[in-house]
Length: 346
Ligand SMILES: Nc1nc2c(ncn2[C@@H]2O[C@H](COP(=O)(O)OP(=O)(O)OP(=O)(O)O)[C@@H](O)[C@H]2O)c(=O)[nH]1
Ligand SMILES: [Zn+2]
Image (cartoon, rainbow, N blue to C red):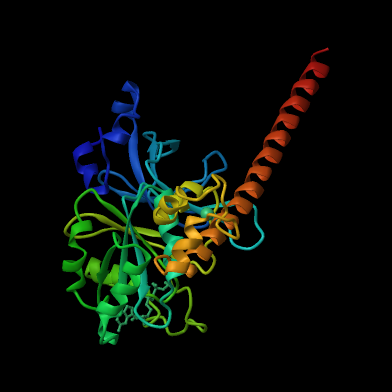
């Protein structure tokens, strides 16, 4: 029988335990997905880690998921997630791509150099809010700047309440700066563009080189996207960290509420607009535009908010259309099968 207490180190919690039926309590093996490959997953159970082939009967799974296996280590079912990061697939695909599941904290990693981009941070913030994860902005490459405080100010200009930490990802001292979130039973996902130092930070926190970094993999011609897969690692002093490859294109979809939460200041201002459906463009009596004119709201921030809302609406509509088409197709297949059975039975 599974030792549920030992599973707590992998962030097993009452939320999952409550989903088990009485029969499952004795018979099943709970497992957490820790790595994802094309045709197989790596899963961690009490006490072993092993690979599990992906079969067509499985729903789409992602690193961080909790699944149930039978005594033959075969997939039985996926447990409900308490949080899920997803994006619209890159390119023209009308598909979801799952990024991570059952995550408590999102480290939004950016480097303190010319790659720093407040609009990109806002995009990740909307994603974290949509997934109900606590966002923390982690500014890397502190050793390469004389003015870490001014970079912090750049982040505070986005939102005064944001938690910001500056680190040198190459040094063990970053562990102290991030200690509040590296606690037993807390799962942290690293988000950020390629080259900002996610894998370097992961390796430093693990105390060993588990993820290849751009510095190490010099054969990577373009020096981009060094991290090829997603992996969940337990941190020696508690907590788990999930490294993700840098996302060149992070398209939001079904994130409306996340965007609204990430731009709560604009939402508050909008309450004073003359029209309830004000788009904050040219309308008379717009309190948001008034704030831009007074200098209390950055016009970049307003444009980004409007851009993300437009993008989200467009992507959500195209994904909804695809879902509706798939549903209609399934109905058609079911109907045809039923008719053919009727015909054969005659
Ligand atoms: N000096 C300094 N270099 C850093 C720091 N963090 C990362 N680097 C370097 O920046 C380069 C890119 O770091 P990675 O950890 O590979 O970046 P990544 O975000 O994981 O990139 P992808 O895997 O492509 O998503 C490497 O050469 C690191 O050594 C830091 O805090 N200080
Ligand atoms: Zn307005």
